[in-house]
Image (tube, rainbow, N blue to C red; front, side, top):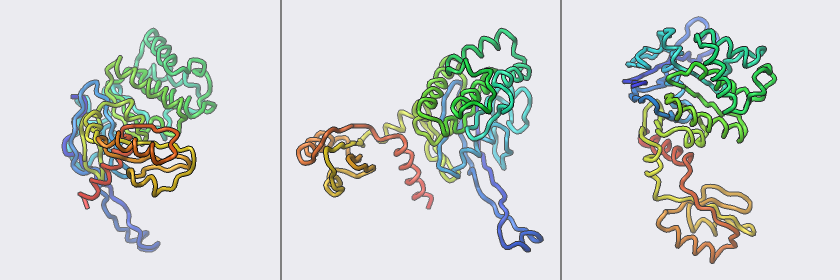
Length: 324
């Protein structure tokens, strides 16, 4: 077992606002429950997504697992260490990438930062050179290794951040929004890269992201957290299977069509000037397509399974109703 979390709870103390004088001389504090008694475990080599809306507790959980914050209660074990002890042996075995923060020195080149990591982690010269060559080629950044970090684009910098985080061959790689703000090409490069190293090195990956393409293409298991509690923990295939009875049809028209004419065939989930996307029951697909083709000015129809983004949103809404 690489990660073992039992009854993790994290409560933050938050200062209440009651006016300048009271806040200055008689401050009062309330409590915010960020993570509520959650338990899960992750095996070696698994690639797991930790998902949730803003404020759900996923980033707090990630920070507890990497030793950045101390839990209020619970038993947390990562690689047989209590993370907040921040023992040197533990830190040598993990890698962390946070999409909204940088670990590289802006005035240095990536190679200079990598050289510093080489000394910190006691990596031999031969292994270091081999690793840099392998990783920079996978991410297509060989020609940028000696360019000052501040002169790199966001996508180029994130690729360097990834190299920096895995140059020492960590056992666990924690990724918090690793593709945030990147263009489509850079995102695809990073997803392919993460899949490649996960398969070849058996590194365990724990990912948080709001980009469902990251989740679908990088991970095999999904843990969904909402309002501090786990509402789903299973394989990606089982998550998708729960929604197998639904399909999405994107209808592309030769001319503008009013909403009421489309609504009779299924629930409208997206609308553009010359296209609509509707949700239908999978078993009714042939009949509905035949009717749409006959009665509406169709140019093309794209048939897709329910997007993962919609599935997760539906789970959030369902759990919110139960919790309320």
